[in-house]
Length: 416
Image (cartoon, rainbow, N blue to C red):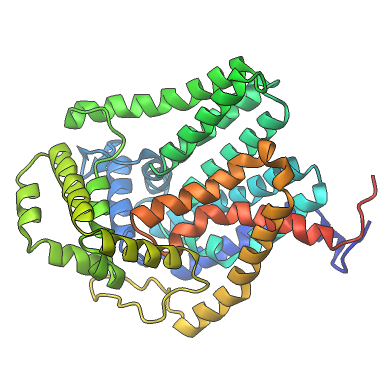
């Protein structure tokens, strides 16, 4: 049934996946071989190390890193040479895969192929998915792992764990998410605790629960063992301490730009003492310093959390953000008013429709709680640590799925 006046080809999800790839590849071609985010330099260096030495780290020296971005970008460098454009084009394909996965997850959660199509179409043209598929960072890989992980979780919950491959898929993809961005690890951990509770209550298969956790644990544990050989501790990350400092003691400067905060931090005694320590001890020391400052300044912490909550849910990027000369052009040559206009065309509507859809589906919370948890957990992490509009990106697939259910309700009823 033609329920919208669009060419019939666009009533097929695959057409929107093709559109998604064309848009992302086109943006990659526009960006070329430059740097557009300060973080790109670090990912580029790690990709070079992987492509030249097959070592996770920098310059052939092993380090504690999240491995999957190094594998993706480094493999592109190994095949095509150290071309950031080649890595961007490879990531464009991952970005298109995110669109496909999001549509399938929406269809699975709603039981409606039309909801899946609407979600696929929105995701294909969503400007911030396109932007972050073009910059050499971990966001797009994390989106792919998290969206697939959510999809498998919701499907497994609807089946009460009857399909062991589905449960295994949930574990594998959440492990991939955690090996792309470590914030995915605590988010998944809560999901497994919830599944444990359902298993105890007899509402989910214990075998499926055990398999999901096993498939999640083994890759992460393997990486933690590898890191133990480098820093002497089973860990997935050694940058949490400095991140907590950026979001507390150094908050005001970090709001201008992280580079400003780091430059000022280098002048402090805390920094000098920390740099005299080993990597793992330094991380512990910086984290302890951040928590000590937070306990001593509860009023400022509350103000910061309110500010970070606003940053997370803001409708458009900051127009007055200072970009230091050492940074590349994060706006990719676009005027700030264009960025604001594009944001205002998408963010308010998706957030409003997304929360409206979440409210109307609340009776299915026992099946769909991974979606609700993804929103709450991602928001909570970044209110406590650091927060920008960019960190809302992993929440947007869920809001798009919820929004698609609302939009579908405005259309004529589907024929069976």
